[in-house]
Length: 158
Image (cartoon, rainbow, N blue to C red; front, side, top):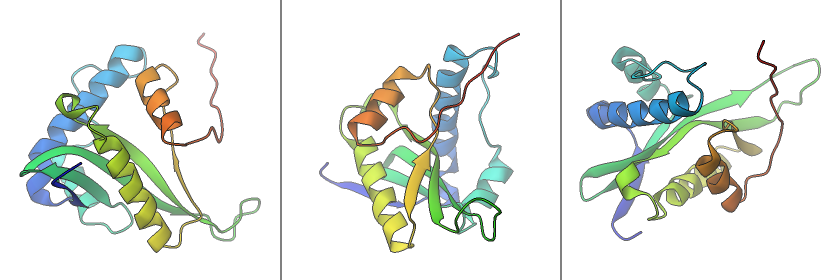
């Protein structure tokens, strides 16, 4: 996308990130109101400030003409000296969101490609993420950009 810049998020981006966090939370609470509260967001502003200042939890934003159109929250993971897991470095995408008004413009793909390149530069073995089974549009998007199922979570509601 022309004029799209992807960069590390900063504190000045918190108001827009907040708005997008509410939008993601709404998607989750709409498909699983039994698990997710309505009208909430994943992080408060103090938590966001800590996340943004921590190199182990980089957040990237997609910006065009001064407007933040999406973000990717990432977490560096490595299980050193684990009993069963190898010591690979993983970059976990904790959250990826594109503003609803900007969808279909390949911003999600640009964010994902940026994250992949960042992970390669950091020496990561893989990039992982989780997606809720009922979030069918996200599932389709992730499959379209080449992600494959790594593991499946299952439940029985009592």
